[in-house]
Image 1 (cartoon, rainbow, N blue to C red):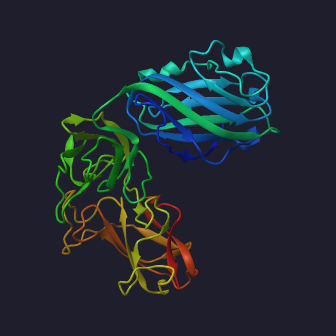
Image 2: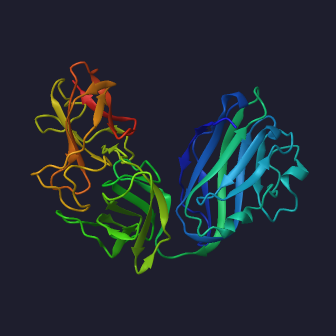
Image 3: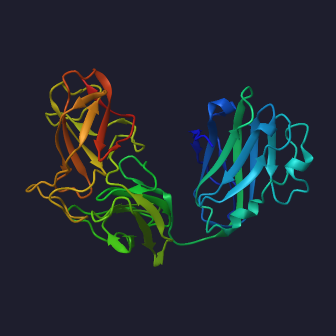
Length: 403
């Protein structure tokens, strides 16, 4: 089967029902369902920040499309459990119904002649999800047109209603283990990377930040283990905990991450280990826009204070990998000797830029510092800054200002 492009969107809303029954919806713009020739799968992501041991799930779906028989509509839980809602069923216009195991009729048997009917049973039971350990994480509704090169439509709305018993204790997922610099690079980790883990019941209600110097292995009553070894922590809160990955991780292998808080330990979550997962710190928490960079004179780089071509800018990153000389994770890097990373490259506005220094930032565990010369041929204005390490690149959309 041909590999298909994915269209992503994500939205989070607060639960609107009782304590043990919650509803979360996608409220973004309508998502296009393209022709089969476009080789595109449309995906709506719904993040559920509740830990319920599920006993019932229903899904309300609205699709504007001329012929439902062209479509596959699948629902995936955060653990990857799949339920088929409809698979090339019924040659009717539009889908606007609630899929519910308790409905008297199945969608494919009844085939309503107009939208808005139901509820209906899906092709596969939604009770498939009841075997998952919790509802927490990102749910995915995927829609694929693999029958028509002429018809197209829109996925306009999705909502999930989940009933279950509340669970306690720390809850994490592999795809909520991300690079701390840009909250991306889900489910992967590099030696020495500053990692953020998002979840529930991870730490104290009032966030705690580690003091300067070497990082502790316990903070606010929370700890993190990687492959069974306690990792140094820089930040702990109810929903997020930051730690530095061990430099001893083996690229190409996997690592198991667990969080312990309030005397309870989360289920282990596996992530893939890469040599580097470079990410740049920006003023925006999503890693987009202005990089937190300093011009050569020490002033903050900005639209009103751009860097002069030929001068040096300095900024911080995470996930550049092992250094020489080696340093234990959690140790405040010294100024002498500096721990450097070899083979790091960079571009500014698509133009190759000289990397004058790439290594651990003195005194700041988990942070890498880069000093890069702005090319004389770089375009002026807001220019994308990309860093390359061990064949991996930093995020798109991070920029500096060039005079």
